Every structure is written in structure tokens, then in C-alpha cells.
Length: 418
Length: 184
Image: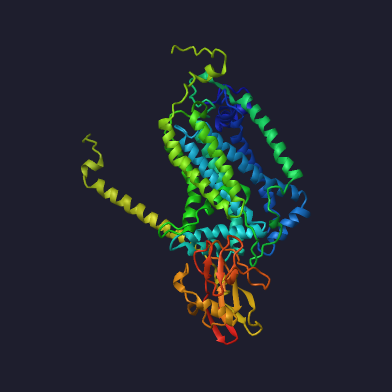
């Protein structure tokens, strides 16, 4: 059935055979969206746009890059100096990675604050965690490609984590490397994976949006949409709002690209990889610092389990715990606006994550060791104890009757007896 | 002419289980086949024949003076070769082995006491410890010191302090004569 909306004969003809126009109309134009979304709801679409920018710049970079230990570093320098606009492609890609993580981290904290992960959006949230995980893997293998000192030693330290696995650990590390150290086979496969993973992320994003459009967006009040009076069409309202946000985002992003392109980078990565010399202080990219701090927090063995293995398990566990968050949170109220205690613990948790990042950037000596242990403890305590218990103890504030009642002076007439 | 159109399974009661059996065996064989077919893909990521062919390195020890340390590359990894002084050997042997985090005697680690040969990769997270050059920090036991997370090794390459769980790995090696070794 052709959608009666279409008048143009060509549009009608196509839409009858392949309903693309109906699809776009259904998901981007007439799509009913809660009328009270604030600017924190911009970051999902921003993340999607950054993904497209990353794939586009990445494909063009790949045309000039050579994944071989003898040529990789030089080919990146050639991109920077000789390839037309190569410097722009590379700086967009480098800073794009940073922006991708900033946007996604804000998107995740938005979800934590407004309880977006609660029923019926558990799978939507879980797919999001998988996207985060795939992003981290992509970023890690991508950082190795320029074959600088940090590339090489970052790859060495992180792949060595797998040697902590009992019995098969060293075998797995050799398998990951394709040799006995990080070397040419490693660089080759990391390049192949770095090209593959973004398309897997793209697929996950599609499923993420599919789940999103099944139950639609949550909203700052965290209450369900009760009818048409609670929603407005996506276009022009949210296309306009998202475009404004995009403009602001691009100003920030391009300010770094043009005026401080190496702000987030490590100077050591402009030294070619040398397998015989370790830089004095190895740090991962900023977006991994909190997880690096958790990895290093464990300095003691527990019974027969080595500190190294516990550190690795905790680091992966810090992301895995997000997968079960929808069931750890026992509160029926979604939004922190109506949860006075949770709101405070949320901000405490936020500060804890920043602290972990700061600790991860510093050498593990003296007070940083203790601070790292306290912050790591709090990270897990928040999810495993505070969140479940708070749902039982906390007395939430009364929820508004409906979205429209809360955002208009007297509420829009529902036209329904209630 | 009969219009009793009974389903086949009622006519032949054993058919249900026969079908289940066929279905389950086919699916199982298919799954095992798919799993076996995955192995070549997984194994292709293991070290290739040419990588394995480079698995041994010959070193001429004659130019290495007493007290000098050199680094050679074996399988893409640095190997520390230390021509130990009498004092260093004595220090390595004087230690009470039971008190070490990873107990090993010096005799177990050095075939010829004058030469300590160990993979120069910190057993914590894979950094290269300092101590090969004469001006380097060597840590308080005169061996090696890892700048990444502060592990300290003694003159036998044994872990003495810091987060590393085990001693520096001793690679397999054989002395050709007193002045050459083959590592690997």
C-alpha cells in the first residue's frame, strides 16, 4: 500500500515498491518524540554523526597508510606532510576519537542520571554497552597503527594483560601477536581489525536504534508517554534542536583540530616504535585512564589468585557491571529528578570516575596507590550496593501526572476521562 | 476412498522420534563441522613458519668484557647478556632463596656462573628494565630496575621488589664453546 501522504507520482511509484519515503517519514519526520527532551538528549545523534565522520576520514587515511613496521610511521608522516589535506584527515580522525568518547561518555551518564536503562529499555542499554566495548577495542587497535613509541608500548602492555589468564594465558598472547612480541604480524592484523570493527559498531548502532524506536526515547521526567499530547514530531522540532547541538559540537571539535590538534595526544608517539627501549612513563589515551587506574589498583594477591589477574578481571568487570545494571537498580522511578538520594550518589559516582581518570594518568606511587584503591572500591560499591539498596530505602518525590501536565502551565487537555 | 486424513505421525507413531533423531544428529554434525572449519581461521593467526624459522639467535661472547652487559634480539625480544663480575656472582649466590618472591637458586638460572642470560622483559606488563647501560639505574640489588612500575631485579635477574610476579625468564640456550651461545 502506498502511503496516502505521497502525491508526487515518482515518489509514489518508488514508495510502493520500496517504502523508503514511508520509512524516513515514520522514523525521522513524523516520529513521535517526548516534548520535554533537554539538551542531554542530543548526544545520541551526535555520537552517530561522529561515527560517520570517523569512518569517512578513516577510509581516506587507509588509502595512504602502509601497515608494515618498516613503513607505518613514515607513511603517517607522509600523510601529514605530502598527501593533500592528509593533515586534516588525520587530525579529524585523531581528535574525532577523543570527541567520540566525550560524546558517548556524556550519553552514558545521561542514561545513568535519568534511569534510561530501566524497563522496557534494558536491551537498548545492553546494546549500548556492547557498542562502548567495541569502540574501546577499535580505539585500542587504531592507536597502534601510527607505530610510535606509545603505540608499540601501549600494545605491549595491554596484550600482556591476557597473559594473566591461568594456563593458556601465554599461548593466547602469542596468538594475539602472531609471533613472540608485538611485531609486523600484530600491526597487520590490528589494521584489518581497525577497518572491520567500525562496521560492526555500525551494525550495533542499527540494532540500538531499532530497540530505541520500539519503545521510543525516555525523557527527563522518566515517566511514560501517555498519549499524543505528550509528544511532538521529530521534524522540525528535534531536527532543529539536534542541528543546533551539532553546530556547537563542531565548533569545539574543529577548534581542537585546527588550533590544538595534539592536545589529547602523547608527544612520545611522534618517536618511531623501538622494541628495545621503553618510554619512562607509559600512559594510555585519556579515555582509558579510569579503567587503567582500576587495572593497577590491585597490588596484592588474594589467596592463590595473582594481583595481575584480579586487576584484569576488575578492569573488564567495570564495564561488564553496566550490563546487569537494569537488574541491580531496584527503584521503579527512572529519573534522578525525583530521587533525592540517588541524585547525590550519582554525582558522587561521577566525581569518582573523574578521580579514577586523574589517578590513571599518574604513576602508581605513594598516595596514588591508596587513592586508586579507594576510588576503585567506590566504583563497584556504587553499582553493587548503593544502587540496589537505594531503590528499597529511598522515598521518591511524587511523579507528575503526565509529561504535558509538567511542561505546560495547566497541562494539555487529554480529551480522555481519567 | 477414505477421507480420514490423519497426519503421518499418527499413522507411524515412531516417526516423531525418528525425525527428532535425524534433526538432532544433522544439527550436531553441522555444528561440529562448523567448529572444525573455524580452526584454520584461528590458527592462521598463530606465528607463521617464517616467524618460527627466526626462532634461534647465535651470539659471539668474546668481545663482552667482564662487568659488561649487552642486549641481543631473539624472536623480536631483547635478551640481556651479563658478563658478571665475581662480586655480582657472589651477591647472587649469597641470597637466602626461601625469602625470594619466586625462589630459584643462581645455579638454576645460570649454566655458566660468569654469564647470566635472561629475556629483558619485565614479567609484570612487558616493559624493558633499565640496567644494560653503565649509567642506568640498576636498583638496590645491582641488577635491573623497571621504570614502568618499579620492579627491582638482582644480578641473577630474580624479582626482589615491586609488582612483577616472577623472575626474568631464562630463555633456552646452549654454549657452543666458551665464547658462543645459541639462544632458542
